[in-house]
Image (cartoon, rainbow, N blue to C red; front, top):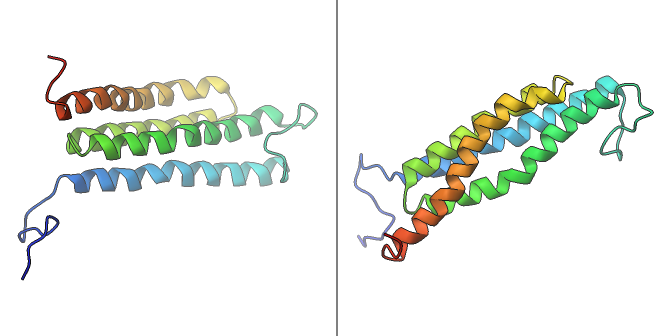
Length: 152
């Protein structure tokens, strides 16, 4: 039997699996946000193709908080997943950990912001930034390691 780089011994663990699991876990931010927006559309009668409620809509602030929570999360989702995938080649457990921190933070962010009060996003936002800022910084640390430690 030929041995390839992806073949592993029984019971052996490849830590990059944590990164793959974390990337899948991060998708739940999209699912959760989508569900919240769909329920808010129905509850507040904001129909497609409107992305946001207009100021003349009775519940514009409440709906727009839910929609903005989802949209802002989508703005960061792909970047954080990509940073985790790339950093995971060098630091798989740390990359997975920080993406999970970002994911939990974004779930809290969506939950809080969806309360209809913009200030509800603050706690989740702080938690999420512990993950995303760490992933950005880690990209430079990963690059430095792969480049042979050009920066001591």
